[in-house]
Image 1 (cartoon, protein in one colour):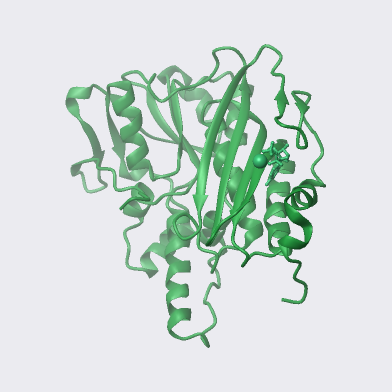
Image 2: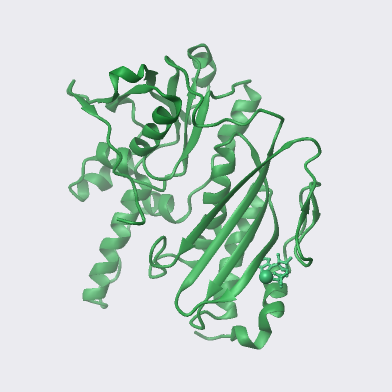
Length: 342
Ligand code: ADP
Ligand code: MG
């Protein structure tokens, strides 16, 4: 690397000041930000939503194929995705990091460039964090704070029988992006001369490395007077998420294979790897789409959006959680989603 500044040359406070120098306050609710003992947030009679995530190198991300800028962006996106999943708007984040001396100030700059880009895009303020050394690897903790009008938040447990199950965007892309990058990584480790073959795979690679949170869907609800009856984001694959909605709402469901939204690029990539696109859509994680239920009366409003697909409906608990294949077969839905402890 041409330019490497050791973190030790700045010291902890110098580093914090350096990393946060470009962030300007965007929200009136941010009263005190980085630089004091704690941040102060005033939510003016709204309710506050808080969520936190821990990301560990080697468990949640692989720096062999994840650019630090993308990692920063994704760190923010996966957190605020949880805020949107409550039907709330994110307003502030905190970022805590621990890194070994393998990391230079320049590499942290790249990471914070990604954080900055996401904060700009989603209009959130970085209001604090913590900085530490680690013996090995990079550890990131992000907390996101959001606001919602009193009692307008949407939980997982409040779906009703007969409600339509909807999902935003398309599914399975991030999983195929991961499959591709893992394959290329293994080829590279065996033979470093081979250049990665990522041609025409921008879509699935982008889905994995640069996901977006679905603010547009929350805004669409607001504009069209829709309140989902239950909602969550899709981080572990929809079969796992559907089971959460059903279990917490004490209901069963029917999901239809022919209704699952799968992008052409995802389908093509699945065929290339000898995988079933449907299985990828059901069990692949990290899509960061929203899955939600609506009253049947809201169907007319939902079809206004090309970004929303109805994939099934909530049914009585006694009938179980069922998947209906294109061939007319019925299967029990099982969660095979992503699990850090497997
Ligand atoms: P304390 O000793 O009270 O924990 P710190 O020295 O850790 O305070 O932090 C000083 C200020 O910098 C606080 O506002 C804190 O939230 C912020 N901060 C620390 N680390 C980070 C970071 N990695 N990113 C953004 N803000 C940070
Ligand atoms: Mg501290």
